[in-house]
Length: 341
Image (cartoon, rainbow, N blue to C red; front, side, top):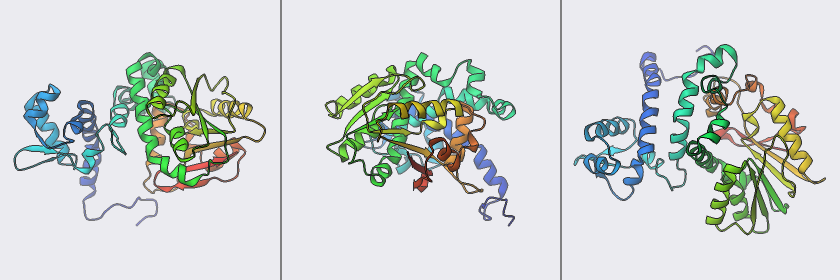
């Protein structure tokens, strides 16, 4: 086989594989609909008939059946001999309050904002410009500010995504030497709370924009960390709150072009004490043709947040920006790397 060709199974005709890939769009939209309706939550205790689910979700019985039948054909939900639908391992990830929940990620990433961006992918390919900005007339961040419900869903989605790498972060780095860790762009505070759970002597600060901080405050209070973690609102392009001896940036820098990314790093450096530590957690794109979530994630960044040159931001580029030594790749499944300054 030509080394430039990705490895695919020779047991299935290529046209069949391509057909499956093309129809993946249908699957994604079906997942989005089921996630928005909360179907998986209603099946938590036991299977239900489509009539029962339709009554709960205020949907059309025959159409809901067609949705669930289609999803069951790809392993999401399962219909039994009594025509009841139940959970499968894949369907269980669409429940709201379970470890590894993907419900809010499905709602946000497959929702209207991303749909608009991806529908204009060709604009980004031809011009290098942000597809979402072109069609919406504003950045996705301004969109979330103006549409509070979409913003909340996005923050919940990012919290869900963070859960995938929290264990790897906690197990791979010793935070015990720090008095106060500042999570810059920390969202709802899931990374900080995981650190505080593991290291009882450490205190935390969540730094983010005002609308997000209110959500973080509620989450910290609900988890019993309000006495050990404070919230500070601000704009990391202008300044970052002082008071920490460790500053964390997880999946932040990749969202911005070189100028803005360096501005964030400089502001963190200015806020740090003389012997402070800056920790950068980013997804690294591996070379070659191997399948990797990071390569599709990068395309999503092109469509939604921009920087036509972001594909060049590999390990060496991050190291240059941070003036750091080579990072530790500690989450191979998601190509997540830690860089320390």
